Image 1 (cartoon, rainbow, N blue to C red):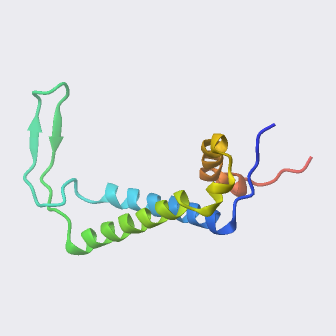
Image 2: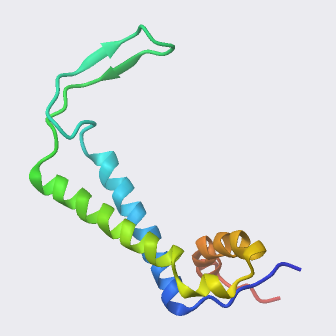
Image 3: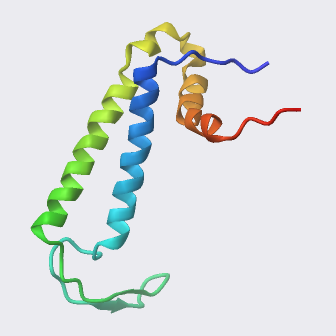
Length: 116
């Protein structure tokens, strides 16, 4: 039988916010130009695959600040989750399993419960 863990609510909340911040940062980075600095486009077919990039206007100061804010929050949350006191209560051999279950805990709460 699979082990279940009684995660503290603050740890669950921290992990959920970490998921949200990472998703928001990923979406933002996909929308932004490929280069932080304004750079000319280029094409290079000398490597094992052709690489092309259009000219990049660079990121605005607001965009740079938003990325930095999200990265800082991601770091704070990662430190909070990984250093939470809960992990000292879990046997060392089970910590990887517990960590993986925490990462996916929000999925089980989101799925509708079916009655038979």
